[in-house]
Length: 257
Image (cartoon, helix red, strand yellow):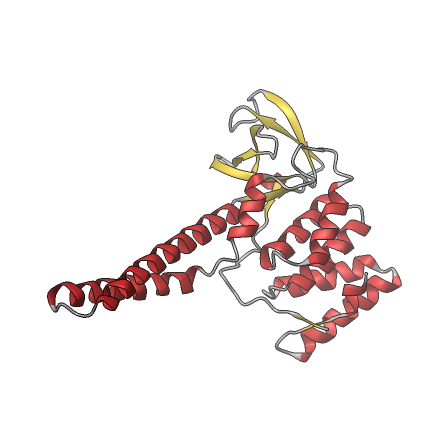
């Protein structure tokens, strides 16, 4: 995988060296050592699409499909347009036990999360406030001071811009909410039950590597929804959230070409 030849842009030389050592270990076949090094970087709070993609590839070579999907998903969470992570995710999904309708082309919620997530929510909010205020000021000047006609036209344009900004802010918020509720099954297989209890009836199983949406949580269980619309309660420990642990909008570190 050529992406492993890139160096991670981190704040200290130790991180760069550890990433380089992990890549070398991966290429030499020492996948366990590479995985441990990548995980050490993740535990330091580094948010990197390249790092997540490499870690997913290392887990895939070890046959840990659930963890592989998890880290490819995290790479796309950090950078929705990353072609390497997307190609790797499509490849690993082809071998999933749960071949759900919609997986190959991505479920609607997944597509929405990736399309809406990158929208500039903060910038959109600022634009909304500025344009909305400017529109009313200009409208007041036009009506009260009988200003030239162009002030009314500009006010209308500001109202339109404010509406567009509101749509951007709403879309970004919706995309973030969808992304924050996505998870991957990392257990080999887990029964999906009708209620949040071990004694509750199980109608089907979900297998590792399946991406789900979390709809509710109760008593150590999470109610999940699959791409084909099926829902069920599974133990919380059988899932890992796609959003990286402790992530709160930290800057994403890029790889140098």
